[in-house]
Image (cartoon, rainbow, N blue to C red; front, side, top):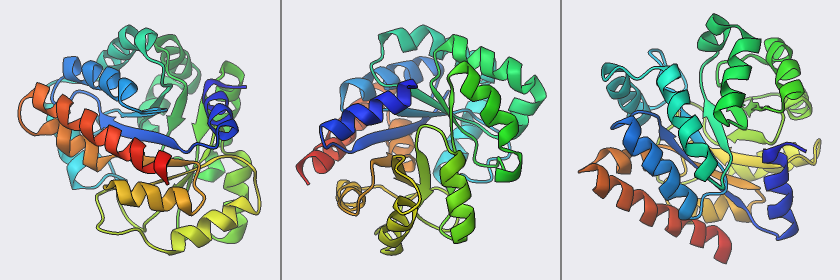
Length: 266
């Protein structure tokens, strides 16, 4: 089993839902990112998703786009992110999933990229612009090296496409709860419940719900609908970017604990 699969299996045995926070690497700086990973790890995160700043983030909403822009303006690169991850992962309990677009992977060469992130201690990948038709080019070598490539299911996906994505995805399936980009929403769309059941009918792999969860009550809702993980991004990125670095770290610690409590108590 991979590290991520093992994490979900342990949670399943204990009838628990995973909490997966997302932050953007390098915002406000890499030192704070490293501290944030450790803070989230201590505050209830089961897996942590780390976004690599990218100049054309098509899947990201305004909060994460702004964070990526600030990081890029400060000279944050993939190499610097991986150096930080390599130095930080030995102290973490939570596996790290890298969120990156496909172009940087292709530019480095798939095999080379996978070797670099494995050396850094990364356990999984989310590549939002990786089309299913090209996914095998990344999935097959990733499986050999032990990296889970988590594929996304959109709310607009056909039944046939959902089944194909569910079959191919590694680690878990990432259900996008809204049509559009990431961001905080005031309420969860009820069709997420139907989509969860539809995916569940074709696979026994874990399902994580992301895009739009910004409150403990929403995390609790998707858990009650049957999700195996609640993925929360913009709400963490926003808190970490406001005030001083220490204030941001305190904010994400408190928020992470409140989310974890919501999905444990439901």
